[in-house]
Image (cartoon, rainbow, N blue to C red; front, side, top):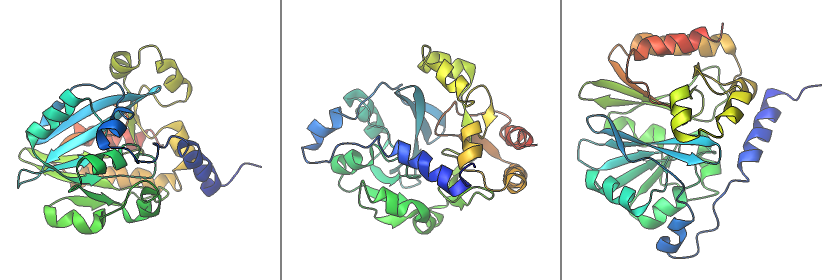
Length: 267
């Protein structure tokens, strides 16, 4: 008999719980180096919006940097960068807010807080108990972000675990997903994990924009509802310019149509 959805999800999260940073007990300079893995330079997506691609094992991962109207920075799914990378980040503004988006993407949260004591750590309500295993949480995303003009979308048809953030841009809007959609294109994998991309293909996670085979198994609770939710997002944000996911190439063209394609894959 197959385990139910909740049990499968917990097994999945338990696996990723092995990938935890060491307890932060040294200076941030000493601790930081243990968290730096290969990564790209900071790349601009739109005015006041950037991303960085890092590589952890066989999986590329994405950090998003967003400059708020007051010039300070919001960081989504933080990745520890080398010192040149951190200098480039600080040249964009002062890191002020850090979103730890779910219980998986928390690996570098504590060292960011250690490096930037003034950094406000925020997380979705549902992820708070798990994020607090790593770093103290200063606020809830659903409470802190809307006054800043950021809309927090609650995914429907998905086991509660994360939010999707709608950021205002001067050219339109950006949607920031975490793990409920992937976009591991062939060119992206060839650039970042050329010798390990076969693993992601074997897992059914590469070559398309959509929820992965594993995601369907452990995250999806109601396929028609999730499909309709993606279609609603595509229809209600006509000025959508950017889609970012935690694992995969950012989408910068035909974003609404790409959401419809991701929904169609569920049929």
